[in-house]
Image 1 (cartoon, helix red, strand yellow):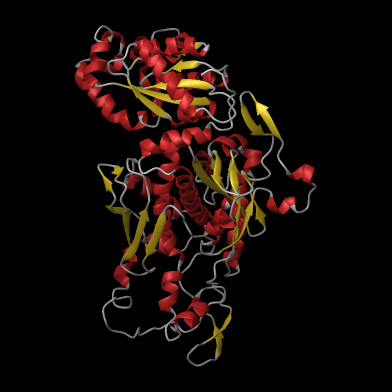
Image 2 (image 1 turned 135 degrees about the vertical axis):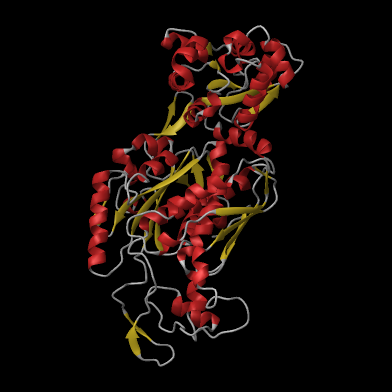
Amino acid sequence: MTLRRLRALTAGESHGPGLLGILEGLPAGLPLTSALIDRDLARRQKGYGRGGRMRIEQDAAEILAGVRFGETLGSPLGLLIRNRDWENWTERMSPAPGGPDPRPVQVPRPGHTDLAGALKYGRTADLRDILERASARETAMRVALGAAARALLRELGIQVGSYVRSIGTAEADAATDVAPELLREDAEALALRADETETRALTAGASDRLVQAIQEAQRRRDTLGGVIEVIATGVPPGLGSHVQADRKLDGRLGGALLSIQAIKAVEIGDGIRGGRAYGSETHDPIVLSGDRLSRTSNHAGGLEGGITNGEPVVLRAVMKPISTVPAALPSVHLGTLELVPAHVERSDTCAVPAAGVVTEAVLALALADALLEALGGDTMDGLRPAFARLRLSARTGPGHVWLVGPMGSGKTEAGRRLAVLLGLPFVDLDAIVEERAGRSVAELFRAEGEPRFRALEAEAVGSAAKGPAAVVGTGGGVVLGDGAWRAMRSSGVVLGLTARKETLLARLAAQTGHRPLLAGEACAALGRLLGERRHLYRRADLTLDTEGLSPDGVAGALVGLLRSLQGPLVRPGATP
């Protein structure tokens, strides 16, 4: 795949010591751990129809460069995935001078890179020189690099996911029918729902149909391909460009997916259906929903003229059957030129479920690349406000103004004054929780614990997000929930307030009895909370340091921040 702002390289052979990966161009300050990467590596290894290699490998990524103390440095990310099967190939795949291999491969497999690669690179004496690198084992590293790109997108509110639409002639249920809300709002949750079945279908009944198709292929000693739907939600308008052919994002995304081993076709939105329908049935009407431009349908798959339009990006990748067919097809021995059965390597019957995870990684890399191309950003702190402007560009007003930050940062006092300046109501999220619980926050913590409070808090965020535009003062822990972030970002602007720990403690001095998370030693408790949540508070679109500012001063400064984010559809003279 070709990237413009990011640079991604992989190296390594299927049965060599390991796979290497380099990703250059990630902004500094992105939270990234090996656990985030390993989660997707584990997802890639699952799926009904996989072969024996998956029982050998337990992929884990070692971060060799580009990360310190859990955050990217802005320098190239370097990763290593060791091949456990290497111990069985140390002599036959040795990089040291020697050879030849006592068991050379000289019979190419129809459908594989064996013959074309051998003719190109002059390696007909042993096709292993080609097939080792051409193997889909390489996708393990692409999934690892894609996990880093996914972390960048997730930090800004973009989710990527996939599920299996069909295997062979067996059809699975479409997300439009069984999970339309996740398809619109949370592609990652959609993917995790697919992970619950062994074929990555969205329902158990559909998965049973796909399993039966794979079992029939196994009975025939054959292989099967299928169709994967890969989606990105939370994508803002404005990624890609119409001004030159090579900048059109639909072409770039199609090329990225086609770079995956065995992917032979890509559809964007209802692309194939669109060739058989009238224009009035194909294009997506534009409406003004509240203060936001949106569409009543998404036949375009989130892309028009090579540019994202603010709707979910929806693509389908068609994977051909795996080339290593157990009932070997006819081929030619390149040494004797005799007609013989094709070479057979250990392989899968069907890798479509695993390929879905690979499509997620590749889409994440391509979208992260387009985002950085459009917005720049050597640091996450510099990227966030630029992204917010793009996200808000289809709005005629800011919508809700969500105030996040640690306790004592001034969300309530400054929020009330900001609401007056904007002519909006003020909503205290904790007050909603207390009203629903019938008791104070402190009493709720004592009686039912923090998990119950967080559940009620999440409900309150969702309720407030669906109500009229308002300034919303949140609790310090609202940032812990991914659902809360989706609701806040989709309904308006998120502004962060901060101050030094000593200042926060001074402001809270008379309130520690009413703050259950500050029970005991308040200074130590607050320090712990700040350490655990600091990276989450930094997700705000813009952050204001409230040191030395009065509540009125904070409110005035927030109006300025809001104006710096407003888009081209905001009418002159409108508040803010």
